Length: 275
Image (cartoon, rainbow, N blue to C red):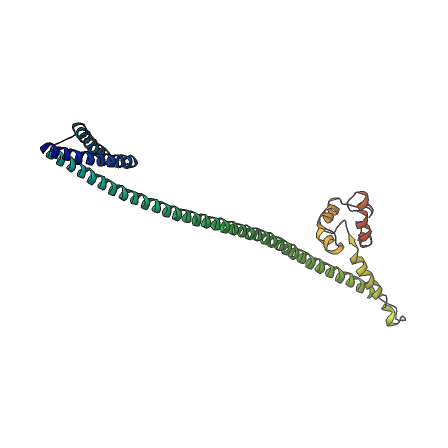
């Protein structure tokens, strides 16, 4: 009876051991997939269970105490396996959460990078526009400054020209007055009483001769400014005429290469070379 009971217990333990072996096989397969801290401990527990089951299988019958100890070890192994599975699921959930956060942060980083590139592109474009506008304004300021200097220089030239013209007009007026006085003085000479009063008519002829003399400029005495004003010559040409004085005849202006032939033809009727 005791043998039968022990045999029954032994068979039950054998079946339990076989089930435990099958569980041990699936547990090993699961443990190979885990990479957690409890892997080493699980291996040691399952090694103890395998050794005990192997001993039971070799003996065939064990005592009730050993059976209970084996069952306690199996329950402990199951609890450890369940705890390890729970830890594995928690770690997988954390890994998934971290991956989701990584993707989220990656998208946010890419969006921030795109926004930064857009801002930089807009800033570069705006900077190029501002620089181009600044350069355009600087060129405009330079152009206006140049025009202002040219206008001021022209104003000074015109002012000087006006002063020269005024002095020339005053001088010619004085010369005309002097010539008119000389002509008037010559006409006031004693006249026979037999000659009627209208005999003084030649005075207008002398008056006509005075403007022709005034319009004929003596290039040996006239200044460069007078030549510019009266003859319409350029300042350089007038200065060359003054530099190459004296002239005995008008044609020396062309012979000395002072003025071109075309210019000489224009002014030859209005100049003189009297000493």
